[in-house]
Length: 184
Image (cartoon, rainbow, N blue to C red; front, side, top):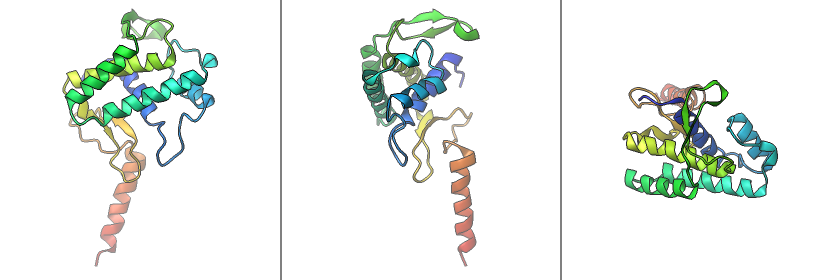
């Protein structure tokens, strides 16, 4: 699957945001500091982390919930409807840019957009590209018991099952090995 740098970054932001959801661990967006850390860690462009406030935190959590609905949508049609709604509400304004040493690429958020609209527009469009390419099944949750982290499977044969083969994949394989060894 051929994917551009900006689409991959937007997918990384969407997956990263999904993985902040409360689950086995605490909410990764528990406060403004966590939101600022997310913006910095994901190098979200055109966002001033020092200006983020409570309204931004609430709005980004809502975008996270919309991304989760898209991930869990039962069909491509359902996902497309959710994506269309998300992108429309974000007020997308496609524009060409070549910042930070990356060649020309498209940003879908309006100049000066709030962080939630930025993530919704770019992430929504990236998720839309997966639907258009017939590749939505590449966006999935980790198959390891108790994990559930989101990831995008970029493998050629769409065979990736775990968010990380070094942690979750290894843990599952070791548990299966030990279970086999216990059998008489």
